Image (tube, rainbow, N blue to C red; front, side):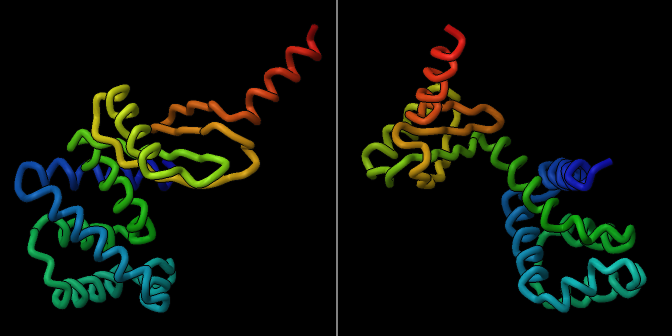
Length: 181
């Protein structure tokens, strides 16, 4: 099993328990905050992910961090201690990301990325968000990037679907048609 698949399983398990026993949004916030705290301190992160450090020592470190963290839900500490016991803390950033994705899906929110040749003006961005929301039936959180190589138009990614309306892609298709004719 890949690390992403394992992280997705842990995230799904945490989410399912959080929906039943806690506040899933709060659990996600606490998990993300703990993951950010660990990744912000390189020596700490290294100690928690290094295979040569025994799981019992990792568990002790996680317990000490949890005592100071102010995490209110019971489900997040259980997951973190399980990851420490199983020597899987290396998955923590991916678990936090997978949990966030699952929470967004549960809330009817989808992430979309749009790439344009020039910065997208506010009114066009809003119109694109509204159009994508109508097309997907979900609330859209849009991230915009600029890449002059696409020449014009836009490349939009919603989940695993890519809508390539770039001038660069249109020129590529035209070239292919001319070469096959």
